[in-house]
Image (cartoon, rainbow, N blue to C red; front, top):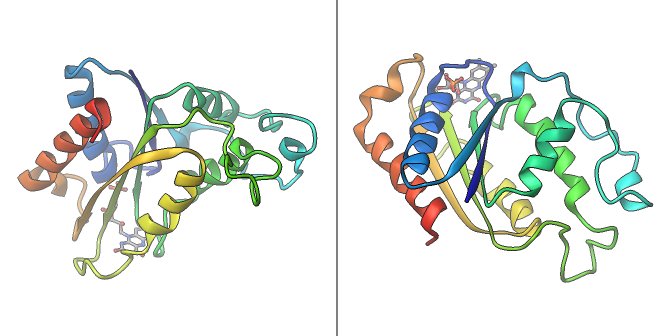
Length: 192
Ligand SMILES: Cc1cc2nc3c(=O)[nH]c(=O)nc-3n(C[C@H](O)[C@H](O)[C@H](O)COP(=O)(O)O)c2cc1C
């Protein structure tokens, strides 16, 4: 199985990237082929709202560094989206990718029961870390985005979330978080 992991933080070795690395390492132990993309290193645009993907093309026509990433996700069995909370949301880097997934939707996605051009049954995990320790704050991020990923055909979806993380090394002190990341890798590879 193929697992694609997108890192939304500019901090290459920050908390979300560290959790994502633990998750992908466990997935590889279980036999997955993994590919990790550092979004901050790409030259990319958000969705241009050109609607070319709805009026002729069957994919995004914007030719930048995100184009091969969108193709890779197309053939993946599982997707991991790792991000810190920035101003109560995912980072701009990850939002660029999310907006471009509009190209996976069929032209009549609003009425068609099969909304997605992607093969059904893909698995998804969001890794979300935040500085604020209050779990009630920013808890809306995952359900808000997960809904759209269900539209795209991701049906087996998981959240790895941790609050109160600031320093880059904070994450390695949280054994429960490490266990959660590894358990989620098992769910992504084996299902369930
Ligand atoms: C620009 C910016 C905005 C942030 N906004 C929030 C926020 O709204 N809520 C929060 O709890 N933490 C916020 N943080 C803190 C980060 O979410 C936190 O430090 C996180 O652990 C960083 O993850 P990383 O190491 O993967 O980049 C913000 C940090 C930055 C740099």
